[in-house]
Image (cartoon, rainbow, N blue to C red; front, side, top):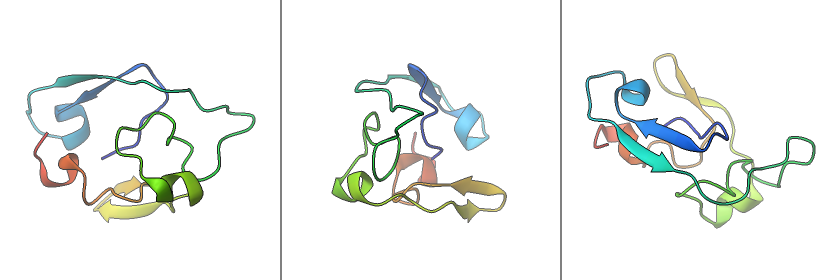
Length: 86
């Protein structure tokens, strides 16, 4: 799953997975991270619904999870988009 871009709404489905899936509207909550002074750890942990303690502490490394699909998320392989269930 690609990490949030800081916008107020994300759409899950074909735009993320690359196939004709039904889109689901997701309203992001929480604080928008400061671009000047980002929080420690993953800079999206203040708004991500999958945040765990490691996200607040350790910045995730950018890595390839599928061919030509890169992400910086501690849990990319575990999230619903990784197995096509969203």
